[in-house]
Image (cartoon, rainbow, N blue to C red; front, side, top):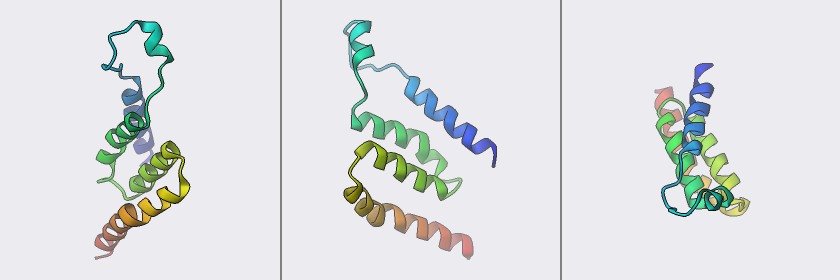
Length: 97
C-alpha cells in the first residue's frame, strides 16, 4: 500500500507538467496563464479515476480535490451525497459480501 501514494503523486505531477496545447502565443503568455477550473477538474479526474478501482478511498480523495477546485462547500456536499456516497456504499457492500 505504501507505493500507491507515490504512484498517485507521479501521475498527478505528470498531468500537471503537460504543456497546454490551446495557445500558439509566446512563452511569456503561457507562463502567466493559470489553469481553468475545467482543466483542473480534468487533471484530477485523469489522475484519480483509474485509481478508484484499487480502493474506495480514492473516491473520497477525488471528491476533496474537486471541492478544493470549486470552492463552493454547499454545492460540493450536495454533489458528494448525490454522486460519490452511493458509489462508496456500493463498493463497501460488495467487499462485505
